[in-house]
Image 1 (tube, helix red, strand yellow):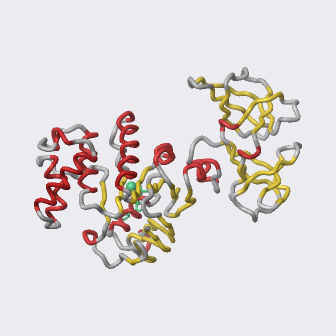
Image 2 (cartoon, helix red, strand yellow):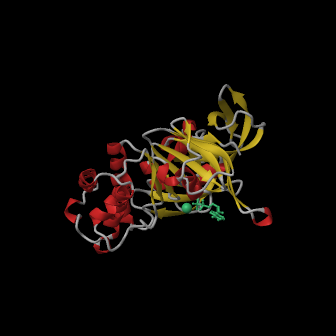
Amino acid sequence: MIDVRHVTKKFGEGATAVMALEDVSLIIPEGSFFTLLGPSGCGKTTLLRLIAGFELPSEGEIRLDGDSIGHLPPHKRPVNTVFQNYALFPHMSVARNIGFGLEMLKRPKTEIAATIEEMLDLVQLGAFAARRVDQLSGGQQQRVALARALAPRPKVLLLDEPLSALDLKLRKGMQSELKRLQAETGITFVFVTHDQSEALAMSDQIAVMSAGAVQQVGTPEDIYTAPQSRFVADFIGDTNIVTGELLGYDGPMAQIRFGEGRSLSVKTASATLVPGPVHVALRPETITICDAASDAALLIGTVRDATYFGAGSQMSIRLEDGTEIQAQVDRPSPAGTLVGLNCDSAMLQVLAD
Ligand code: ADP
Ligand code: MG
């Protein structure tokens, strides 16, 4: 496992200094598909470069299987990287590219040949061994880059937005391909993306990052159904954030009321909020529409418009306090209709901020 302990990385000094990472701690379990997810500039690449050894932390340390790797230069770490631009040798053959790292490590020729063979099979490029890399498609080059990075059998493979250069269809294919490669090799994959749907589809665990800090770590389901902060709720999927009144706590559950309605027991990311207005996350697909006068109505609003998207419609509703929210419905109500909104209280989450 990779143990990132209180790592801070500052670039430059004085007024122009940039805090790329600030006190980041993470445990990346051995053999997992682990994703760093966050918007551009939040420090994802910097964290990968620290694990790879291309940069050293300003503070803190990184351990691999219990041992500090801070003193090891990149080529001595059992870690390899797949770069966004692949960084292949365009004029060399596929086989040469895959074997290049092993040649540098001065491995025996027979071992190199056997590994190339095995890697070609793994990424399903057996027929292309002799082909020059600049004669391959983008997706095939991506496979060569993966094969080359896996050839020295690293314990950890770092992948920095490896799919961002591919078109949507190819990207979907490579997503399942990467999952398969990770499962077959058992190597720990640390995968970087700014695309939340990609992260949800691929990962065993996701660390959501923002502004140099880790906001939340969890399984895709944790992150989606129980976002802890407003940032995570906003960043992952379409989320409505509505205001409710916190009445108090009943054990681990928060007691919430919307408007003049009845109180509900709702899960919460924080057990220390003071009674009063709080933010509650509400997923569009968990909302059902009912009569505005019905006892089932948690919230009341006016339909603004609806957009058909094939599997249903996205209806936009303005609540009495002015908040615009989105609900996924089978049959939208006409604009101007006063509607009630209901939702299973188990699908609500009180945010920590
Ligand atoms: P991400 O990969 O999430 O887009 P980065 O890790 O590349 O983010 O960058 C995080 C922050 O650190 C950004 O503000 C970036 O400009 C800054 N940064 C990254 N590398 C350097 C560097 N070598 N020198 C100065 N600032 C840097
Ligand atoms: Mg980056």
